[in-house]
Every structure is written in structure tokens, then in C-alpha cells.
Image 1 (cartoon, rainbow, N blue to C red):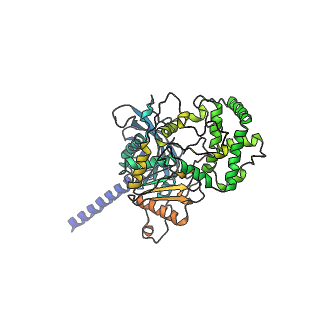
Image 2: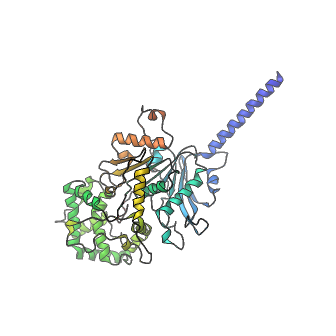
Image 3: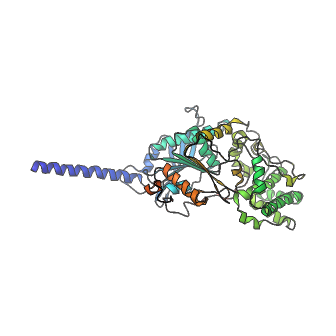
Length: 477
């Protein structure tokens, strides 16, 4: 009897020890403190990973990191550079969202819409060649969509060992393009893709879709109002360029890359209508001045507030050299007819070559976007594309073909370049939210059974969920 009792007590102790170890190990992976290996130590144990800073945030831990990447993934033992990324850590038992902007990474804690929906972790990657994630010296031939997708693949491969649950790729605009290209080259990495407002310029020289868009967007009254201000700015070119020269002298702006102040002025004016619809709503049209009675200052203020006269200065272009390089080598760029400006334009929509320093060689590769488009049509699986009805960049969207599976293209009515799942009509919002939850492996049973409407799992956080969709200068996605 005593022998049996000793055996029972030993078993209880053993079970208690194992259970405590499990609890401790789980706690160590969460946002709060634990007795096991700290999540920061686990991350920094990854070869090539280094810490820039850690910023506390309630319920999370937020890290700004560098990760050592090959300049050329075809030569992984060659030259390297440090790529900046951030990690919003919640818990290793939660899914992870891989966010890309296609530009610089925000080094403040932020949570994308899919991250809020799945209540997960978020990894955010800075795109190669955006400062400071730029090789030195910069071999611009290594800036292409495959190299960038390979950056993302290496980061995922390294972090998947820690964040073993499902992953969703996401991004908006050029970031949505980036998420799509990543899926095209590494389709086994992600469990789903949510691409917001991602342009798809399949044939660079065929841009009639934009002409059709601008002929019907919003209302005729609003279109006429915008077109009139744009035309009036070119009619008053001499007076407004004098103001531009004064502003350039005051701010130290120069025009070496684009060539002349005149070219920069026209580029800003031609962006005006596009930029309005990209960042504004139909309700904002009332703020547009009446061209016939507006003063020079009112025309200037409206153009400057929507397009931004600093945009095509050397100082305004410098940050975005990597984008314009890609637009002129692989991504393509839009062009539209401007019948209301007949006889007033000298340059028309200028090519990306005009916005990149002449010392950087560029050659367009027409088959790159065709390849991606064909792949999406025939192979898309668990991919969601969200567009805004009034966003010019959505005039050339991605399309799904007979080969696509469990994939969707949805459009938010009246929305601009900031379109979200939350802005879709109710039935489509429920569908998109349910799919994201399912792909991430966290859909509640009631949602899976169709007995409950899908909703985000995380509580709203005004600061963390804030979209930094500031009005950006230049015609860029």
C-alpha cells in the first residue's frame, strides 16, 4: 500500500512539473514577462538579426531590427546589406501578419487591418534600396521584384521557427503589389494574402483604362471643377512659376534631376486631378475653388495642398528614387489623355526616367508584369484584393481567372486609395473577414459554420490601428 502511495505521489509531482514547465514556456512567448527564454533573446539568436531599439506598448512588445541580407540572392555568399524591419510581438501562439508598404518602414508601433482581424503578431519590412536599407555602393540592377520577394522569404524563413502558426501577407498600394509578387515567387510561404489597392499595369503602353476612369469618376460637376483649376494653373503659368521660383529660393529647392523648374511645375499641375481622387472623397469637392474667379494665390494653394510643389524638386524626389527606378524598369507607370489641357501642356505625363538621377541606368522589362498577371489569373489561391471605387490606381486592377481558388476581388463603394475591408458592403465585409480568419487558422467555430458574422478578434486601438495615409506628393501608388 505504501509503495502504491509513493508511486501515486511521484506521478502527481511529475505531472505538476511538466504542467508548470509548459505554462512557463508559454508565458515566455507572450507579450508579458515569463520565466523562460525571452522573446527578444530568441529573435536576436537568429543569425544576422540585430536590435535597433525596443519600444513598449500595452499588450505587445515592439522591436525595430536590422537583418543582414545578400545584395544578390543569387549569390548569397557575396556582398550584404542591413535591412530594417519591425516586429509587433503579441504571442507565438497567435498567427503572424507580414506587412509591406513597398517603401520605408514605420518605426512606430502600428497594426494593419488583417493584424487586428486575426489578433496576431506583425512583421513589417522596409523595401530594399529605401534608406537606410540600401547597399553601399548601390548596384541598382539588384533592385527588382524577385530580389525583394527573396528578402521577404529569408525573413519569413528565419522567423517561422519562432512564430510557427499561420502567416498572412498584406500591404497597401505598392505594398499590396509587393505582397502579390511575394506570393508569385514563393507561393508556399504564406497561408493567405490580403492586397489592398494594388495596381496591375500589365501593358505599360496601354493606359486607356485611366481615361475611362477619369471620364466617369465622382460627378460631372466635381470633374469639371477639378479640370478647370488644373487648366487655369497652366493658363496662369508665368504668374504661378514666379511664385514657384520664390518658394524654391526660400526653401532651397533645386531641380537637377527633373531638369528645370518648368518641368517640375507642369508635373505638379498634371498630378492635381489624380491626387485629388487618390486621397480625397467626393464630399471634398466643395473645397475646390472656382477657377474663373479664383486669385492666383487660391489656385496656388489648391494645387500645393493636393499635389505639393515640393514633389518634383531634388529634395522631394530623393527619397523615392527606388520607386521611380522600379516604375521605369519593371512596374510601369500611368499615362492619360488630357483633352481639356490641349495646347497648354509642354511635356505631358513625364516618364519615370525623368525622376531618377541620370547616372543610374534604366531599361524597361515589359514581360515582368505580364508574368505576374498571368500567374495570378491561373494560380491565385487564398488571395484577397481590395480596391476603392474612386481610386485612380484601381483602374488597372488584378483579375482572377479559371485557375484561381478561394480568391476574391472586392471594391469598396466611394472609397479612395485608403480602401479597407471595413469599408466594403456588409455581405462582402463579412466574407472577407471570415476568409482572413480562416486562412489564419483562428476563425471561431460559429463563423466557420455560418452561424455567426465574422468580426475582428482584437479590440480597436486608435493609436495602434491608425493608418498613416498622409497626402503624399508625386504620382505614386
